[in-house]
Amino acid sequence: MMPWSETPLFGLVATLVLYELACRVQRRWPLALLNPVVLTIAALIALLQLAQIPYDHYRHGGDLLLFLLGPAVVALGLPLYQRRAEIVRQLRAIVLAVLAGALGSVLSACGLVLLCGGDRLLALTLAPKSVTTPIAIGIADTIGAITPLTAAVVVLTGCLGALIGPGFCRLIGLRDPLAMGLALGTAAHGLGTGRMLEIHRGGGALAGLAIGLNGLLTALLIPLLLWLLEWLGVLVG
Image 1: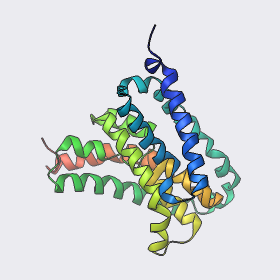
Image 2: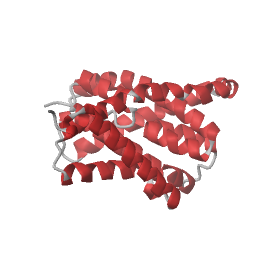
Image 3: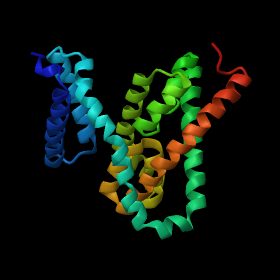
Image 4: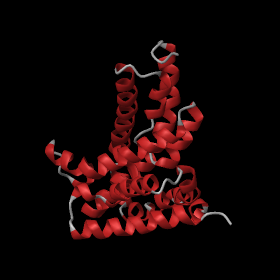
């Protein structure tokens, strides 16, 4: 008989149980650093290490949750629909803001990697870091990046955005919840949107819109920027 840790049920049950425990911890001590997603990731790593369970065994069930990310993103359409009139009035400004965020995210990621001595492959792997995981994986596969590392960096980006994003926005004087939602959705995809929904429903709706727009724009921008940088001789080797 196959060991339970090798069945899809293990990864699914372990993730859900640990997430529920993390939510209870966060309710008991409502601190930003005790974000349930961050706690769940840390607990899963500790569990796999202590029990010496290979990551591939966990993935059998973990991939089931990854599949649900797509419907979860689509579900964000409800708060968007509820604020559709306001969004239509400001659509041009919203698209330009997300475009600037998408461009800044890709260029900053690639630029920092190259400035620190990283190679072309690592730069491409980090380029879609601010895009929601299903889209980022698709982009990584298309451009020949290291897909598992891209997925890990995307999750890390979302965790950091959810933890420090709202505080950083207030620090730089960005206090309007709608603008903050747009920023968090663009920079920290689903995790940032989830955090924004806790703060302000309208801001969460715009964050959900930013996820889709950023995914679309980044999927179009990265191949174009890749061609341009290679033509300029920046991304070679």
